[in-house]
Length: 89
Image (cartoon, rainbow, N blue to C red):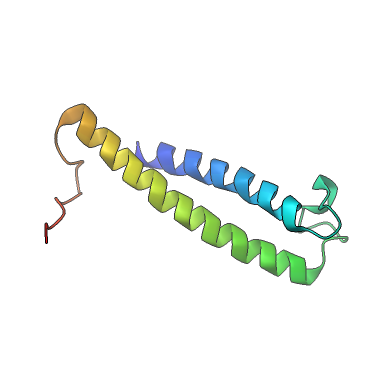
């Protein structure tokens, strides 16, 4: 369940990142130039894209994993295997 939610979160994050990337590009960021392997995609843009995707997918993975835990707890009334109950302050 965690893997599926992480994959769905990563896919959604990538789509959101692509929309954001295209919105902030000076040239309008056509889809044809969103491929870092494309020679029209500068090295600077490729590095920025890699950093942006890495951060975005990492955040999406955290959110989707936490949502999966919440869903598990709502469905079963217990914590998922390997997840400890949070310490209350």
